[in-house]
Length: 312
Image 1 (cartoon, helix red, strand yellow):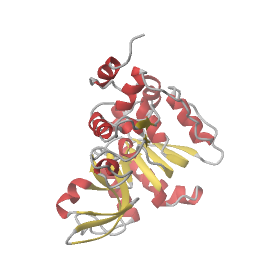
Image 2 (cartoon, helix red, strand yellow; image 1 turned 135 degrees about the horizontal axis):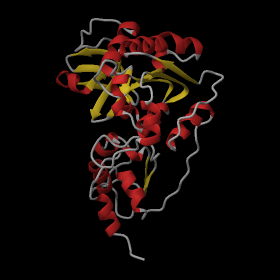
Image 3 (cartoon, one colour; image 1 turned 180 degrees about the vertical axis):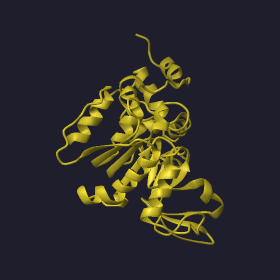
Image 4 (cartoon, one colour; image 1 turned 180 degrees about the horizontal axis):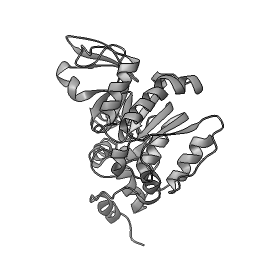
């Protein structure tokens, strides 16, 4: 989305700055906030058509508003429901979560594994063990293709603590480039809640060089602290729209207040072949799935769009 809006990706622009396209399809549309949604619509040429596609059950945008949900609620646009659940135990589990049911699924090939833990220290220990040893050995997915997901950055088992432990095991080093070393798994953060996973390849006078999906990125030295984080572990908001062969979801006891159905649905759906759940949330997990839907976000978008629709 960022590349589309800044002109580095997507269709070309006409003399007036509008997209030279008659049809624009946006995937992962639930991640559109009102600011980016407005910027996108302003770039459409007169008569162009816009198709928004996405799963309404996933986490919403990191920015203000819920454009996709508001447009669905108004009901004035043509709508095609076409969701085919992922096959296998992970697909069955995630589909149940989407309707508020946390069911036990049969996983003869260890597609889904629950790892109970008592505290944050054990959660970190078992997570590192899973990523570095158990998942590669039992499932055949290497550490670099396994993503850890946890509710927040802080806390005893947040992304900061998990990334420190995973770096020590998988790529130890002094962090001589602003806390990073060549080979470190990182995420480049171009904006709130949005990431580009990558790997550090080096640093020079220009800044930190990161090999990201979609091409290399050079992050100026003055922006490294704000725009680059270690990426073995991320939050579910950062993981929206991305998938990995294996995912390890960490649910520490001190983060249960952050859980709700969209969070669990999103986090549990990030692994294509395997899902491990490091579970220290006790009854908070089924409660979140059954009872806690997303908190409403109020903007004027629904009212404004509704006012444009013809009355029956």
